[in-house]
Length: 246
Ligand code: APR
View 1: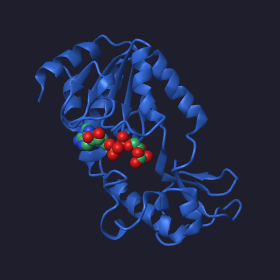
View 2: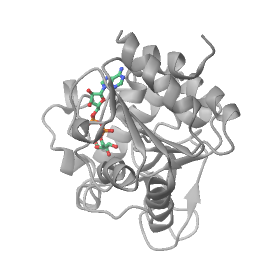
View 3: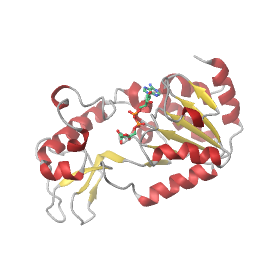
């Protein structure tokens, strides 16, 4: 544990007035939620990500893609928020606003008790209509594991409410995330490789606008150049130490 970086980061966060957190798959690693690529193991190792996570892949084989997401959904439902999610949820009490912009689709920030979470890539526990009717459903219970169910409104397939390859992010969410990056005074970046845009552009934007950027990641990432402080440790170990009284 790099206590010097932790001590400096604690001081920066204690003085923050408009902090923003950006999280990626590493945030949930200690909850046992595999990243998209790590989940491509066993039976799924022969499949391309694009085949399992794109509108074209779903249209070509709805039961295959639905089955893959059913398995991941079960994994997410079994997982519990880790000490890092819980530390972020508690940290909200110290600030007027404490938005968390996440690329994760597992809903673990909300389950930990965080209230202001922007799920940029959607949520695997929700479903929506594959057609144009706009139907959305929040309840993961009773979803079949085999064929995708039909949309109760228009009869099209239902699909997971996540952002697939080739799809645009929700424009309202993205605009709020960009504004937060522009206006924050500290951006805490946790567990992201920084290779998937537009989320990966947020730390650079925050830094150019004058914010301090703190990265928590046990490994190097594409964002390291943007960091004022690098904490080379895991989310569940480092985050409780960043906010809680010594
Ligand atoms: N604590 C913190 N960081 C960790 C931990 C941990 N315990 N374990 C791994 N990491 C870091 C890795 O070092 C890596 O930099 O988490 C990062 C995970 O990177 P990715 O798997 O690329 O995840 P992410 O950046 O969220 O990917 C973005 O890509 O697969 C798509 O849509 C999916 O939202 C995802 C997007």
